[in-house]
Length: 105
Image (cartoon, rainbow, N blue to C red):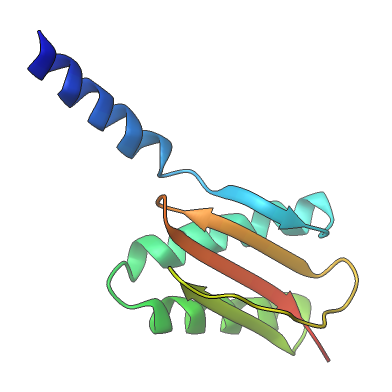
């Protein structure tokens, strides 16, 4: 029984970690949802290359919401940024991967 429960718990944990956990956001709801979906798509597509994922997110955000978007993706970083109001999203994906997206012109 213990082994079966352990596998079930592990599967539940992995399933929970496939959804983004928003740590902070001041974006309007529609923009936040679109950005979250974009971040999840990029992180899944480039799961072994954070630089490519960040580039994809930045280029898409620049096209969709105007230029000067910045993206940082990683597991161990701190930051202090200046950003435009209603243009910041900080989330976790996959448990330990953090994504910070902001606009600063």
